[in-house]
Image 1: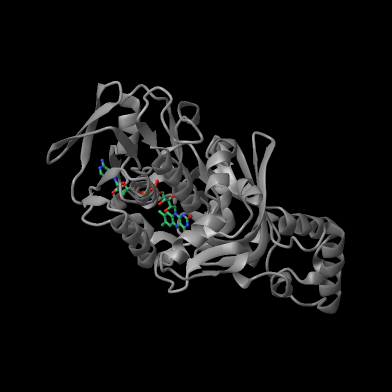
Image 2 (image 1 turned 90 degrees about the vertical axis):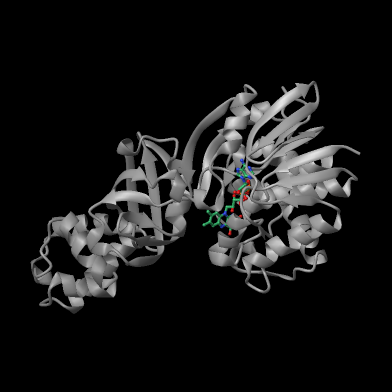
Length: 404
Ligand SMILES: Cc1cc2nc3c(=O)[nH]c(=O)nc-3n(C[C@H](O)[C@H](O)[C@H](O)COP(=O)(O)OP(=O)(O)OC[C@H]3O[C@@H](n4cnc5c(N)ncnc54)[C@H](O)[C@@H]3O)c2cc1C
């Protein structure tokens, strides 16, 4: 029996602690907060999208960075296993649109309760309100863990302290400091799944668009093109497709990013032009701004016309061929001016982190320091929304706990 210390009682820490205890180890979880799972509590708008009901193979298409590194642990602990694990632990689940899995109760706190119950039944001990300050290597595989209250020793340490997003939940980046202390490379931390700051969006604040396509180019290279919903906010844009696109843009210099919004993705240019002609023919004496109401949300009309320098009040019969062509372009290629991503503290996930080359992908053990493991968001892995990030936390946590 080994003495195992797990640092952090978030998604990956609870899973790691359970798996290590289920293997007969003596497990102590040290958590700086007064309770477990503070971040889990706010996931999925309080409903916790625990995983995604996709076959493991499709899972990797939703991983943005280092999908290859995750292959072993996701195949060993795939989404279906997470689902079975939670249901057998007394948490009924339901699958919603896009394979998103939620607790049937719609309560994120039930997920933490289920994980904590597993841990306690397996004999895990918890120490809350105790922050780990330092990890020391005593002998080749013996560690000293210094907290703000005491010093403890362990045969193995599993670090599950999360990224630096939403620091009020307890994840303030301590694990990166521990990793650097052991000479591990830590890649630049960047926001992922966050809003994009854009100029000139204030008049559109609060407007949400459905069934649009948002595309990004960085220095002339196509970065991504996503179809779905988005929202204008006080700072720029947010909403599902913006969040996903931000994860693809966090390696780019935003000043060289071109953001283009296709407001009518279902219609190719030719069909849309025919439609415009039809609408214009049917209302020759009406103002162009008025006629566009059949095609666009009202608040979108002024910015679209401004982009092509056509007055809203211009009668349709006075719209020239050139102006109509420009209008068509603006509907298919409405330009946004991105300035920056929102700060990482506001991002749903932290991209970057511990270089996965430092970590054994089967066990999450640090290659340089046997007995030391890193899991979850701390690693340089991140995925789109849909339950993929929690699945990564569970699978990496399970791999470490099981291996220890
Ligand atoms: C608003 C929001 C919504 C989200 N919704 C979803 C969703 O629906 N589905 C999904 O898949 N993902 C979601 N995510 C992402 C997901 O929550 C994280 O990727 C996941 O929780 C990471 O798990 P973790 O175990 O690595 O870290 P965390 O869950 O952040 O846990 C880290 C724990 O370590 C503790 N800790 C830190 N430092 C120390 C220390 N020095 N000593 C002791 N304890 C320490 C912290 O207090 C914390 O409890 C969401 C994230 C946010 C912010």
